[in-house]
Image 1 (spheres, rainbow, N blue to C red):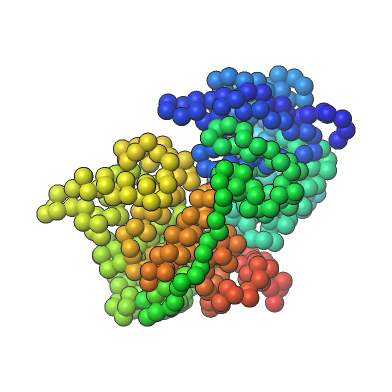
Image 2: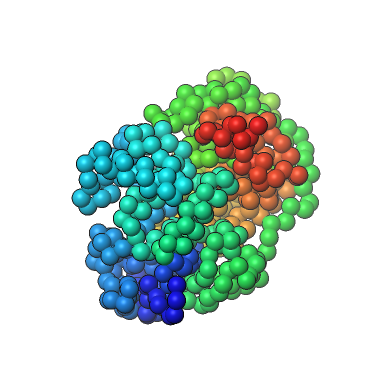
Length: 507
């Protein structure tokens, strides 16, 4: 890269929705071969900005230039034709189709399948992301599915590749493979716009960063010249606090799971195989695993959504294996699933109505069979205030919140019910650094008050920060817990990687 040549220039981009200015006069540029981070809290405007670049949203004002020419894609097809590709946070793949068929669906004019399969093999091998075009996507790990998305983009020979939270479902080893690929693309002149809440990754990978706050550009920097804490403070505009684990002691045994085995929840899901664990009051147990290794199945079983064989789940000595979610909530076992919209919260319902979904029993939100909407609203307001949920009020529909704010609401709704046992899956997925720290601290504080907490997460740094003990979930089997103190990320990564072909490396 020489001179002041820029691949993408953005000047004054503005986009407003009713009641909020998602982007306000945003300007920045990216050079060919540059890996550029887009940083900001949840709701800062990152998603809206990249959607405008990719042609999913039309700006109200401002201009873009690509390679010195005006750039205003009316739809993603036009953006792709101009050389802009995007890998979304949520995969858009059909599990019942194979890799080549999924890739073909994302192309305007796919070549014959034999030729396409050969190109997939060539591209995937060249960039260190080997794929078998004939494999069913439903049989792939989360990391392999991401390879499909990336290879689909690389077949377009993009000038600019946008990546949204690309490492949220990867083991440390898979992250290294991805970074190797991105550095190779960068060396060949492809610009990469990278969105992630994992600040150490930003420091390791990115050449520059633009920081958004409240829809505006508030700063820019060279990430490797900053600490992760400094980056977080630039994002939030305030001092950043890490989680405090002090003041906890382990008490009586609260939850015992023994020999838990259940069939898959779906055609491509894993079965649970002889899962056993013991959890004490005040303990935080971290369970790590690459996506699709039984996390949803385990949470559904512990929450009561899936009853299990008698004697497999006991709470303070009482067999609760056959109890559903409401009876378990009454006894103090609460859960927050990974899928925010549709599982943890109903999109079209207000936050007040969503407070009723799990809080009716423990917060006494119904009397003599009638819902107490005033009490439900006050509970929703309590969650909003305690967990700094950015919303106009409890009357707002769940789907109107940004992903991070809805996550804070969902976790807060469960924590404020003071459970004896809380099971959470991906508590800070897609949440900015400050909000993630707040959620982690709330879980530690809950444990400090005598609750037992199970944190299922693919964020290994998160588990090492807050968990007392760690267990790995591989193909529906749970390893014996090990104390997190002294356990290295590499050791944990190898434990997790054993789920899909890395067993030898783990020995």
